[in-house]
Length: 428
Ligand code: B12
Ligand SMILES: *[C@@H]1O[C@H](CO)[C@@H](O)[C@H](O)[C@H]1NC(C)=O
Ligand SMILES: *[C@@H]1O[C@H](CO)[C@@H](O)[C@H](O)[C@H]1NC(C)=O
Ligand SMILES: *[C@@H]1O[C@H](CO)[C@@H](O)[C@H](O)[C@H]1NC(C)=O
Image (cartoon, rainbow, N blue to C red):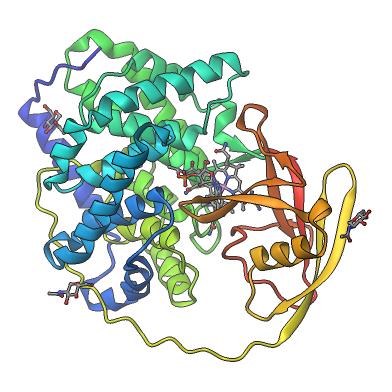
């Protein structure tokens, strides 16, 4: 079902004008580019522990055009990504592979030939098929999640590969349960789906009438998803939470015909984000990488654009690190399955959730043993007391403090004296 590409001049004009026009409204002004320095500081690190971390940072830096400024650091990142693919190849999840392809494909560098020599796009097609098969066998649950299925479609679409538009139209209907995590509409997921569906819709519009019905359905999905995303807008302009706002901004940049100007004040969202940056909210690479493109008016749909990746911003000199000697604090920690298993532990101030879990594990391995997997966002808890999270059953280990779900992971959440921390066996 490979789309044929006869691009009428009008389509080309619309395609290239609409998104960039809209972005200008809200891009961070050149005079205040220094606001972005903390993001770049966070991302320019020599070694990452997970391939998605490296890939998402590489993608982000290339999209905003750091490319032409300092080749050294980007060459290292691209080398790291390629090495991992050569070593682990088919061992990646579908969305991880998609992310790798987007990162290597961005800005038309020599990495493009790596994508083709290694047949990464055919591998991605197979991984996407495996996601669909899993959904059939396991009650509509994919191997991973809809954020990754969206990344898959986005990538296949940007690189003009095969996928069934009828399947896409069916799969991405806004009432699908996979848009919801723990009963909540996932803004990250909806936003990534809007980017993917927008790419599909644009490429369908370049074709003759044959696919009219699917096109209509896909455009309707985009419209509903944009509505849902906007309904998650908070008073201060954030959409969902701090960490979903970047993806939401990208989705809104490319879908401006589905909402009116009065429905979204882009500047307000941007200003709140700049304020959060100055408070250190984006102090892990994944968070920094996901917000940066939107602040410079870029979206993942720009990955395969022909325009050169020139950047108005430059890499800052890293600030000196200051350390102070820590004192001990005391926190309460529980593991909840059907029963609750609790312990009080003492850790140095400045410790994160993970340090508390390690301390508890030292005290009693039977009750508090756990395993982690490195991911884009740092360590992800995969099992506690030997009980494993499972996507087929939609189970996971939820993190809470004072009874409220955390919006950060165990590697980032800094604990406070007297905190009441929990890991809770949950369903999403
Ligand atoms: C799907 C998803 C989940 C699923 C994961 C299982 C599944 N079916 O895939 C579920 C619902 C279980 C989940 C759980 C959590 N999530 Co989540 N999740 C996502 C989402 C939408 C997509 C992740 C993805 O596939 N990425 C793409 C692939 C290519 O990258 P990857 O590294 O291979 O992906 C894996 C990791 O991202 C991991 N993962 C998912 N969530 C989190 C959170 C953290 C902190 C870590 C370290 C890893 C992790 O699961 C992915 C699949 O294996 C992201 C949104 C985003 N912007 O990334 C939020 C997101 C990453 N999650 C987030 C959070 C906070 C959590 C929780 C900590 C919530 C809680 N209070 O318990 C827990 C994790 C607890 C733990 N066990 O360590 C935040 C992280 C923000 C931050 N600053 O750290 C995000 C950005 C959402 C948001 N906007 O707030 N999540
Ligand atoms: C580029 O980055 C490398 C490594 O971070 C550094 O050694 C080099 O001096 C930088 N070059 C320029 C021109 O900024
Ligand atoms: C995909 O097809 C479009 C339209 O023909 C073309 O402009 C674009 O460069 C192609 N992209 C890739 C990555 O081949
Ligand atoms: C761990 O806790 C269990 C259950 O309370 C207890 O039986 C066991 O003795 C404890 N082990 C250690 C090493 O304290």
